[in-house]
Image 1 (cartoon, rainbow, N blue to C red):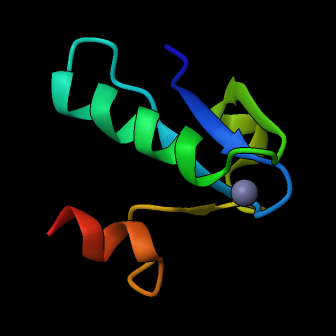
Image 2 (cartoon, protein in one colour):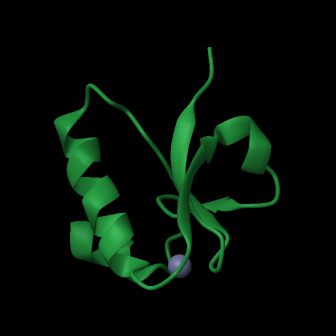
Length: 68
Ligand SMILES: [Zn+2]
């Protein structure tokens, strides 16, 4: 089973897509807004894991504070 995610090539961060999770849909929209003007692509997590960092786990990211 492959896990898809939205990834920003410019910032090298990603957000995992959970199609059945409505909260995740909002997070995806927020991610895309934050990276507006950047190159955001949908990729398999295995392709970017290791070289990209999760935007959710990055506590210094502004989005984390907005979500709290
Ligand atoms: Zn970006």
